[in-house]
Length: 107
Image 1 (spheres, rainbow, N blue to C red):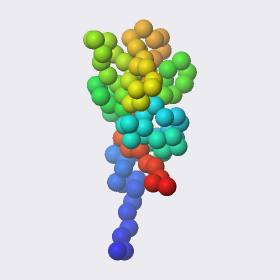
Image 2 (image 1 turned 120 degrees about the vertical axis):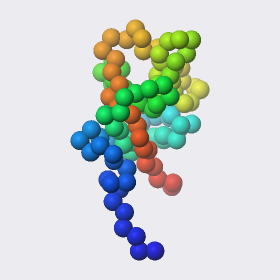
Image 3 (image 1 turned 90 degrees about the vertical axis):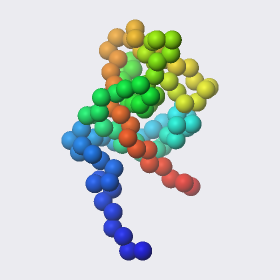
Image 4 (image 1 turned 180 degrees about the vertical axis):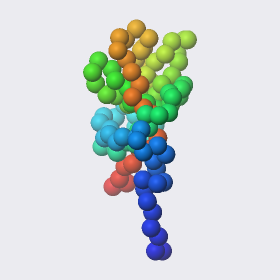
């Protein structure tokens, strides 16, 4: 099949608000994000419960699911080997954007 695709047009909804990052680690493998995946992140989307977000935590960017446990806001890893992080009392915590796509090799 002779098919031409523009991945920017297909995967990016808001070009000025979109950036890319590589995933590192194994905390989100159950959510389909593997070590080395290319993540597409949209900063224009308002984060809500159960979104997978890129967040700034103590000066480091991390990928986790935004969630609520016992009425408190947490960053929740997909891998049960890691603990959820209560974000309510962390100063300077910021959601940088919503992960809209994870691109990884099948090999």
